[in-house]
Amino acid sequence: MTRTTRKVTHPATAAIDHTMGMCGNRACIVGTRIPVWAIQALWLQGATDADVIAAYPNLAGLDLDSVRAYVELNADEIRRDIEDHEHLDAPNQTRNS
Figure (spheres, helix red, strand yellow):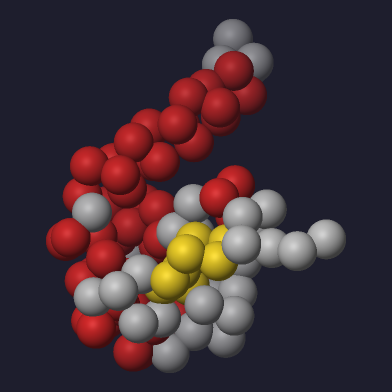
């Protein structure tokens, strides 16, 4: 199976790409299956860079810089990705009632 990769072209986002069939076809950190929205969601919840690196020890500071740049350039896309993920998780969060 051939995977199609759409490389993000802004130099500050060099560590971010879209590969068909990976990460739900959403922006991911190159060489990983870590979606950009997941890192941004952690930051929005108050996580520090150290928290993110602890959660994903294979990431480096430059990866986080690329995530920040990508989020800045594609804020609407990442917001939608986070909302989509929250929507998928919503039924699981209400089962305790």
